[in-house]
Length: 395
Image 1 (cartoon, helix red, strand yellow):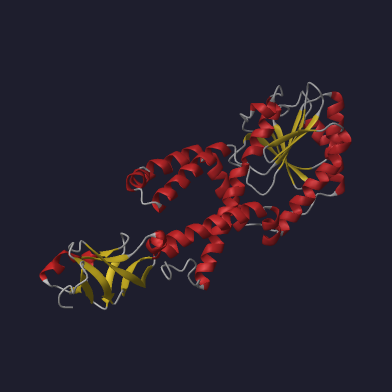
Image 2 (cartoon, rainbow, N blue to C red):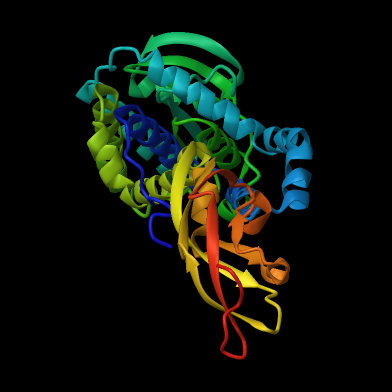
């Protein structure tokens, strides 16, 4: 049906900006969902959201009402399930907005002190747990501990992890090139697949790395192996020689990220998420935002005559097509793109000699949700003939 709908209306710059900003937020949400521990739950929630959107699109009133009626319960469920993740997300947003000047990378002696200390503890199979904070605040995740605020050195670190030290079972927290606290207690992880048969130190390190962007270094009492825990992932080093370049890379990447990673680099790293988010948001905007705009459309439609008496036949209708003006939401025109709009006249009363018909709204067959505004011309005239070949009466 020509002219029934323009699939892509002209966009204003504010609408383009709206789509771009929402797409960026959606892409960030996708990246966050991939990293969350409740990823499968998030996928299930997205499936329900897709069903709701489809129900709205198809005008499934009962299903749409069920979803909208349980929206409050749904939001409570989301908050309960993602309580920890949402709190972490808001903290990271706040840390990004209130970003402090980037910390200076540690001096070479500090890095060497850490590597030498952990190497010695590994050989002696003395357990240790070291925390290197990131941008996220640690206060909410840690408990206890003793303030040290001391210059970082290998002898001091080794003395803090000595089995006779009162803070031996806790974690030592660094801050730049200083020892901030020792004997700190960390939250435990429930990721038993990664923990396998590892002990409490590994569980505490993984628990903290799941909740913030800190890096934890663990020395196992049983095996002497050194593990690096970051971004919710636990990696055990095969050789002690791997520790120094790994720590250098972590500090370098942290410093670079604090200096500021361009938006283009972020989008390039997650281009699939950005493309998917853009496509989904663009489709939703077209259907729900642009589609809700009230528009007027004029259609040229045919005139049909039904229920003619058996002794009459139709020769012509003048005019054979009329122009109908409709008003409705743009999406209503889109949905009815394949529907047939026609004027249907009841020819039964032609037996009484009637040949001119005023077109009424009830004579127009059109999709629902479209309001008929005007018919031009408002009437048509029928030319009839006798079914036996004679004249059908006055025309």
